[in-house]
Image: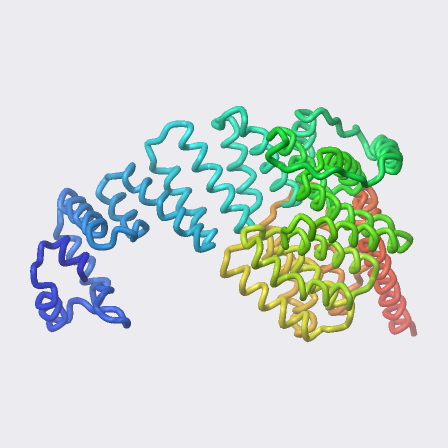
Length: 510
């Protein structure tokens, strides 16, 4: 009301409001008189139709200036009025300020949209454009819109100072790999690693030989390290460790051989450098890699490594690092088939992880997804349904696309079969595939889609074997079968499909 009165030049706002309400022209919001709008859209349209373009621009400018005077923090409300008044640079400034405020309260989806408006309408130099692109990329990443985040990081690279370009290239590669775009991500990873003096092998066979060599070197070196404060290390050395981590983590599901090789480089470099938080991060990733590819024979080694890592994290005094180790151990327990233990550990660590690093959504999303997977294989179907629907509602509210896709199309797709909604289960899988786009590749997302579709086939009495046969060769070439859990789950699914087919044949026999 105060904004409208100031823009209209009305001294007695209450008297004017009484008159307008008495003539049934306006109404106020449920909370009082602060929100004011025409009582019907036709009244608004009729009022606007009587104004010339110049008068409308003047009206919008008056409203924007009234907001500035009476509600100086309401930057977002100024944007549309400034745009309608033809003041695009001012609208861009308001959008950028509003984006910072939205990001501060963790409204990452809205912040990304506002940064986009600032980029679209601002009269800005390359340096400022680069800053806004990085801010938008960051919030897109936190919102789970990984492909868009990668694109924005890519646009920011040529606009950034030379000292920042490696970090931006790292972020772009990380988002691309996390999104499952392996061909594009590997190309970016090769270029990024080349800047650091590393060269990815040409193929998986060469990768295996390189990996064997690195494992021997690590065994000879051991895990000893000498703690060094980050301020005593050159920034470019820290940036190199971070880049190795991004590639190793991003390739963990997509290409286990190359991912394991980069993890060897990462772990040796982190131990050599000695910066405590990066040493612990490297060890936590090593826990996951050992469990995912080593099988049950690595159980004791994983437990010892996790305990060593937890002691280092506690000594460093950062609770987040302890939580990170627990996440890695919970993932390892899932890979070893200790589903109840894994589920309980994820349940214990997730609240702490949310508290310590709210913006690190990828780690949280994966932890939630593997918590559900553990609950499913432990037979806690009620918990799977309850938590999946809760996590999905939260992901929808936050606009977290990565989490939405994982919850709808990965292992938790089984929720809609538990609820006896097979058509809905299949719809979720196919909508997610359409949203992701056809990459022409077969990697972890395609494997999850194959599993979910085959489960629906089995549930509805459709022969699932043809679907598995079509996927067999692409799956073999993908190297995903090197991951123990995927290898076991695939064999389990193939066995169920074969039994169902045999049962159908027996039922059809005369």
